[in-house]
Length: 183
Image (tube, rainbow, N blue to C red; front, side, top):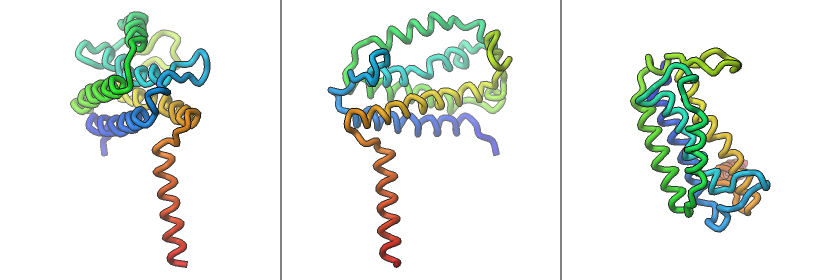
């Protein structure tokens, strides 16, 4: 069995869907909340997540590169930082998460197994000399899940029980009710 582009796209859509659910549940007046003085605000974190595929698209997109030395990483980071700094309300942030997420998922869907197997040379001094495009693209989802975990803790800090926690609690309560009914 091969895990290919369509599978990557489906998995990414699931992750992005959960991120969007969090963005929808956090009250707009909490989007400026920062868990620590030097941390991104909730709104900035959500925009950072929306932009997370930017690096992958620069490496693997239409102008694909096979050596990271060819990527102007500082320029890319400056563009993303400027985009993160743009003021957005809750609706605009959610729309941005949706549009950027779907753009990346559509890109993933069209990738061939041979493309995913290609290797990209990492920067000198990196822990590995190269990585497959598949591994690098999987990293976008991992990056989003990392930040989504942070947002789930921040949800607790602003008084919101994360939806995944509520869903698990409901399943546990149903299981206990079933057990009680059969005892």
